View 1 (cartoon, one colour):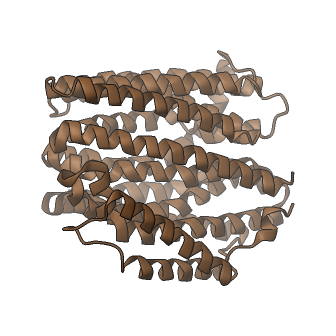
View 2: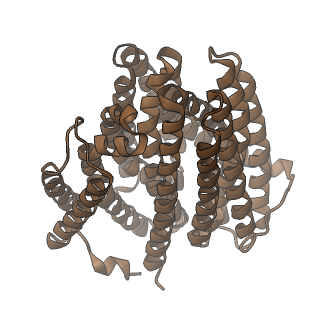
Length: 480
């Protein structure tokens, strides 16, 4: 099998696995929203958003750097073990620190205790995320997908049992049990991921302090860039939880949780490309430009219809997921679909930045993004609540991605496949035009079957038009 075919097959496997996980996640969100209501779900997503900030700090740029380093080593066991041990320590430290810091915030005692319960799950997810680099190097993402499906399936089972038998209990007891279910499923994902990774690289505890210092010296610009990037992506939920009622957080969280699952797709695709970009950035600039150009066109092929279709169908999606109490979440979801489309491109650009060793220059963009996002949230959330948070995210993502693209272009001369992007945009526009005849307003959203048919029809129309205009090139799937 050619290299391109391996990339495509691994990407498709990852996407299929993630699609199953997203299906599980949507059912989980639907059960939890219906069980807890706007206020209770707002507390649930506040816990998750708060812990996400400290998991971001624990990343230290280790995942991206480990993927790069093991891609350049034949015997990657010692390298991976050092990264693994360092990540364990960092995750434990930052999550314990986060639990303590929660008591400095004006949250209810139930939310603070929920943060303590959820911290265990985030610990396992943090370490699991580092191990994905092993599967990316060996193009074995099917195993990572299997681990995630098993974990999310376990969470769905736990949540369903809680929904059936515990929903009548005190709301905060139910909240705590949902967080326990999340932590248990996170352990399942970590355990299986660690077990599967041993097939390719022997990973264990390794305390090579001088090597750790070398890692930290190399990775701090990556770490700071990741921290800044994800803080401005997550901080809106924190500001919303501090400035608005829990019900507003729940409405925004319902839209946000759906789109968080979608962001995995470009991240996984970019992660699979990372070893190739890392090698070519050093040894073959011409091939780097070609891989970058093709990957950005592939991202455009999937991002543009996602944005168009998502904007048209948002109210139907939120009604299906959360019920009538959450249909209003369709408004912020429309904006967040636009932000998600921009993030699709940002994932490839972020990996290219690391491969080209431009992370120090990119820090300016990430720092600007944090400052801009904080200012916009402080201005717009008090007046426009979750809509202010959503549009602040769109503006910030657009600015940062534009700057990253400029850095990559300036360093390598790599540019977009303009023709391919235009063809994808045309096909997406045709799809949106057709969907507008079927999409219902907020007062009459599509049913489950209607939404499913609209999505299938939209996908068929989009890819059909794209094929007719020459936007899909079959030879690239088999070319070396």
